[in-house]
Image (cartoon, rainbow over the protein chains, first blue to last red):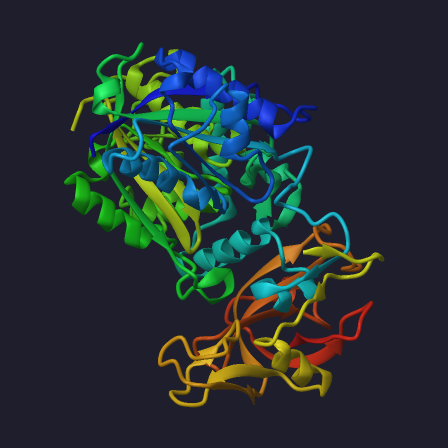
Length: 378
Length: 139
């Protein structure tokens, strides 16, 4: 592709923001523009993904002082759409429809609508009407069901999941943006309360309020930005309607299709990646997708983390910001923000030495996507 | 999802494609949507088969099957579920290959549940409303 990520912005990550998603999105977008040294009036496209829980591109663009946009869209969905949002912004630019697209996510994910629980009695239609009446309804349950299957088929263990949580928490330590920076041991992990077995509290993303934004531009604008552009090498998606109950093999995710698609498109492979921003709504998502992307064989992810291959000095640094587990659940767009920091070489204490290529994944279960980003123009 | 007014389990909202499932459970029967033409089991149900486009109807199944996977609830994340802990199972049904259903395990402690365990379904009422659903006992 011929587009680059040239600006990143974010709000503080809060437990209770007391702010509207509009106010937070506007702050994050202004941050991305200032970071890029691009004037708001150069932005002619805006894109977000949301679950009826956030300000729309029209509201945010108006708040930024723009009278209109040449293109705007709000995809309905979750983390599965993050990679696609970045790639779609690039595709819209390459199609000549826009010059600069702001991609943002803004949510009160802790104080407002939470994805892990259902607070009141409800009526449920659609595919979940069959399992909602016996209480099978929320994402920690779906993905724990998949994790248990992986344990039965490949012998993975709670401790294997624990090594993922422990490594990412250690990474979050020096990250000033992270909400959970206190290191944890295996004893701490195993003493964590059950959310739903086999998931403990440390297996689950740390829900927060906040917003992040990324500015995507074409090569013309990228030639004159404040910081080095970070280029999109390639993108792939796999969005399946199979669902969480009917998906054939719970030990693999969308990434079983996305990985070969992405590696074929880019001519790259897992061993080329310096940094891997692996979508981690839950630890098991990291496990299944690390296998699918070819970082290790089935059933070996626990050892991969335990032996230090997923951290500094290992094969690839996984989630140096702490991920959604420890930096915070900005619904996955914060992975692209961290990839930009790492590839610019501006990640401070958590900088991965000579980071040139990053894999950024997004999604879980039947649906998701991934991008490869590069410090050099492809 | 819309709100109802008591501390009861989520209530299903049938639609024209799914109502046959709930009509069968009301009769104490577990039945799943199946293509009349090519025999594909379709769960969640569809008006027409996703494989061949043929018409579909609800066919009874025995309710016997095996645990594909399971989770154990140690705290309530959904209202109206009663005492913890309890197991929720994902079931491969013997006579509906390719379709899976979920349910709670009854009459057994969560520790007795394992992947591969044999189960059979029975239909019970959903508290707080007119609906019935399958639950599973270890066979």
